[in-house]
Structures are given as structure tokens and as C-alpha cells.
Image (cartoon, rainbow, N blue to C red; front, side):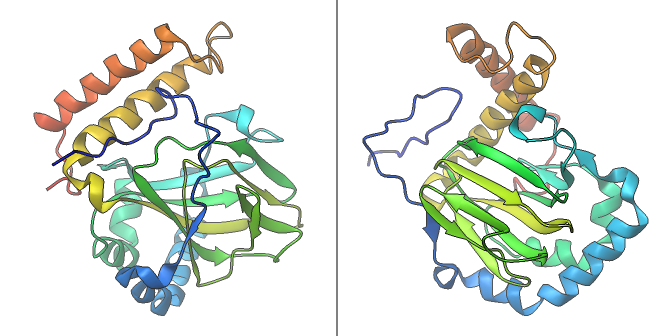
Length: 252
């Protein structure tokens, strides 16, 4: 039986002759209804936590992806299978309990776009996941606040799930006077579930390299044999950690 191999943005060039899938129907996922039915509980818990712990919300490190630095912020619960903010996980128990009911979840965070901000068009890290958004605090719909995957624009809605292909070209914007808040989470696709540990290690390795490269003009935004090799070295490092010392409650 042939094993499916996922695509990674830092290793592979995009085949522009292939038309990417863009959005997926939430009705095809059993957990989507569960989250939407509990969306008000999630909203109240997350907004309460954000209001009390604003110091934990950090700007996204890749500032070149924004039209203005520090306007895209996040609070991370889990980042590619590793728990990040223990305080947030402990103090948002209802949200975490619901998320843990989702099979093959590897990442979860609160994503905030400040007023008059734009995330520039880009490809995500891999096609091995479903990237999901749950609307928490949506100021307006299209055309002022929205999301584009490929050539299709959609609006977020409070309490509604949006699922898309992170490996497709996509962008987001919030041209309003209020912030946009969503719960963002990633789920490994069923065909890749047996590769979850290696997928998480590869993406974490690449993101670690991106974080370092952002601080060095010579490497910022570059993709070549050297940068790929460095990313894979970091990936191997994380894989060894996952296999020995780094315990993940999501990789059981």
C-alpha cells in the first residue's frame, strides 16, 4: 500500500498547474457541530481570559507577512503538538476540553487581527492538515473583513466554523475599526495520521529556522539548498525530542 507523502512549503516548490482545494464543508466533520453548539461558551471563556491576560498575547514573529508590524497577534494553547501557555490551558478548561475531543488535533491558538490590518498572500506550512477557524469576535463581514483562499472570498461569522486548505495561496484582512478574534486550530488529515510526529517535527523545525532567519538579512525570505538543510536538521532535532524527552499530551 502506497504511503501518502505530504507537501511542505519549505521543501517543495508549488506546482501551479495543480488547482488547489480551497475550502472544506464543516458538515463533513463530526466535531464541527459540537464546537458550534458550544461556541458561546468558548467565546465567553476566551474573551474573559484575553481581557485579564493581555500581556500573554504576542505579535506573530514573521512581521513581513503583515502590512504593519504587531497587528497580527496570537495566544497559543498548543503549537504543533506541544503545549505553549500552561496558564491559558489551565484557565480555559471548557475550551480545552472541547478541543481535545477533536481527533488528531495538533495546534490551537487565539488569533487576533487588529483594526486596519492585512495578512499578505502566502502559502501555509503543509497540506497535511485541515486549518480551522471558529469566529469569536467578528467586527463585520465582506468586503471590509474577510478571508481569501485561491480566488474565493469568504467572511468569518461569530460561532461558525471555517475550514480551508492552508497549503493554498491565502490572505486575510480587517479593514474595520475593531479587532477580529478567532479560535484557530489544526487537524492532521486521516491519510497522514501515522506520520503526525514527523509532520509536527518538520513544521516546528522550519518555523524555528524562520524565526532565526527573520533576524538575519542574508537569510530572510530565502529558500535554497542550505536553508532546506538547516530546516531538516532542526526537524530531526524535534523528532528526537518527541521520541524521547518532549512529552506531548496530543501525541499519545
